[in-house]
Length: 293
Image 1: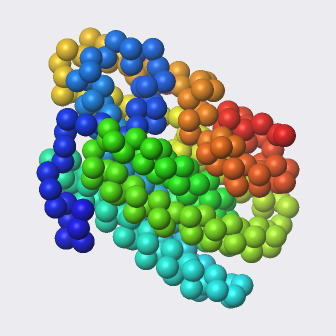
Image 2: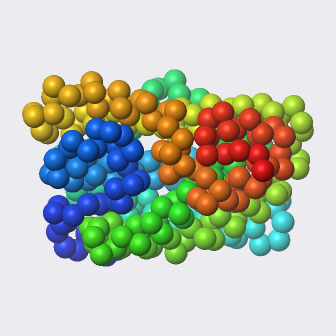
């Protein structure tokens, strides 16, 4: 990939993302999908995964960080956050280019096909992210999602020999920056959370739980649309659409699947901080991979 875009054709004969990072892999349905169906599902889910990254980094992270760079932060952190913002913009553009090359008919007019945020929620999120002083939960969200991105990027590179080269190249660039992002997330959290009163902490923890449960945890709307797209492309799967969607829904209670999303090995810094904050001790209700030590 070059600064002008994708420099060579996408290799559609390869998986785009490690199989174990896709939801259907963790369901019984995956066993009866044909090799071609598994391949196409993997590719569609990888594009959805890229959408999630674009949404998080451009719609949320850049707005949150832009607020904090205007504050009187501890030495060096403001400059670090400016770099953070620039890198997030660059990442979003990388994933945007990749998706447009993979599914040009779906991304010709925008960044999102599988992700469709209702207008009322979009308005609510915009209001919240513009006021990080009152909603520092978004700094927690930055930390746990950046940690997960770091882990996932490493998983891509472990499978580099079998995955599509453009996806490997993009994740390699992503990985190089994510280490610094996690560090700045922690510094920012160390600065803002002690300033947050007890009642507001509890409110933020509850909103955090709701957001993660609805949009960052087990597959719901976008995850179902990936399955629907697979079935729309392959008429042989139409009689089994409801079965596939039901299998994805059941992942909400599948601890093994949860452990592929958030765990002490994937998001260790966030989990260690949950341990120290009583308002987050019930987070295991929605992050099934979390238990108090």
